[in-house]
Length: 74
Image 1: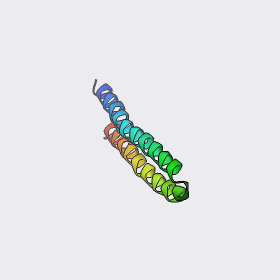
Image 2: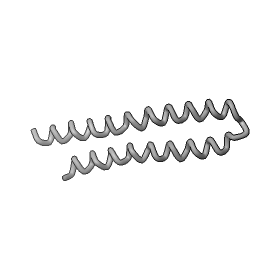
Image 3: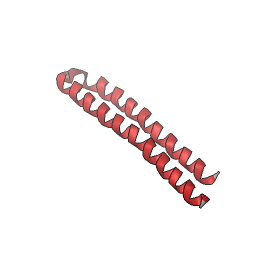
């Protein structure tokens, strides 16, 4: 029974930890493409900033995976 609770906690942690970054990346990419369409000369700077933001959002998802693994093995 305890193992089943851990598995449910792991799944919930990864699911909730993945939803936020997924939504953030979608919004970030959409807004960056919108900005590039309005100002093509600044596309390089916008792209660099977008990639940095996506990397930070992905880090949140990786943290939730690490927490899920800690729940699993501790």
